[in-house]
Length: 86
Image (cartoon, rainbow, N blue to C red):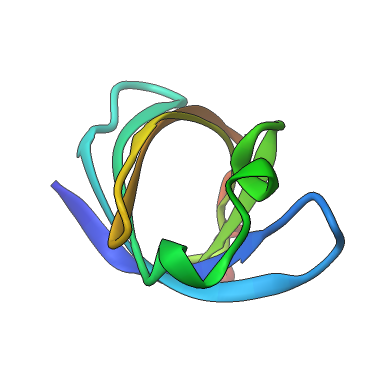
């Protein structure tokens, strides 16, 4: 399981801090949960393709499959893998 913190970029241009738990991380695909207080946002904020900037440097494009007032269930694909510094 991949876990960590990151920033979810919403469709109105704002960002919110989230914790993520990806249970599936096969190749460049991700599926799991974004944990934060979704009740503070209008539901229409999650109706479009979103990007997640992870703390390890990856950027994941996600779509929402389900939600509650405390999490989003998402699936997505990695856009930019972390850069290895030698």
